[in-house]
Image (tube, rainbow, N blue to C red; front, side):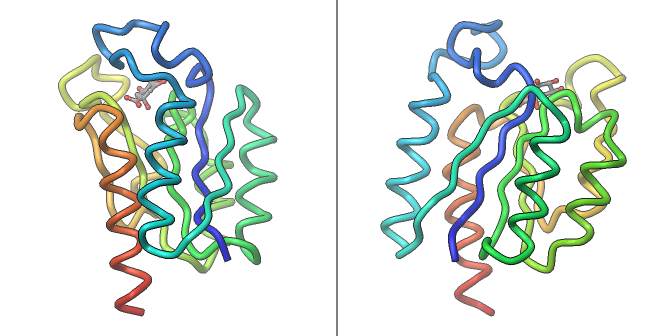
Length: 145
Ligand code: DQA
């Protein structure tokens, strides 16, 4: 089983989009850093991004059987999507929610995430490094059983 790392809308523009908020790393840089951290722990990664809610839900449903754990940055869907929460609630594996920015220091509409009710951990405000923290934490959780 693999670590599923799922990214929501507009994260394909990472490195180009509002770099003062999200930094200069691209999503390809994030993928490479996650793959390195995962392989050090003996895991392979399935890394995906979509601007479409249904595609994220389809990957989460696939994760029910194929993932050892899920790392998800649902991006703007964090603040709107009961459907993504429901999909994650149908998954038996650990889930870690990542936000590159500190959503609590930003506009009030970003302060609530539907996904946090399901997440085993939430990482926000660590920049793209948060993904690597999430990989390492997931590996610790899985090792603890
Ligand atoms: C984000 C924060 C969300 O509020 C925003 O819509 C994003 C990215 C983050 O990683 O900081 O697209 O999830």
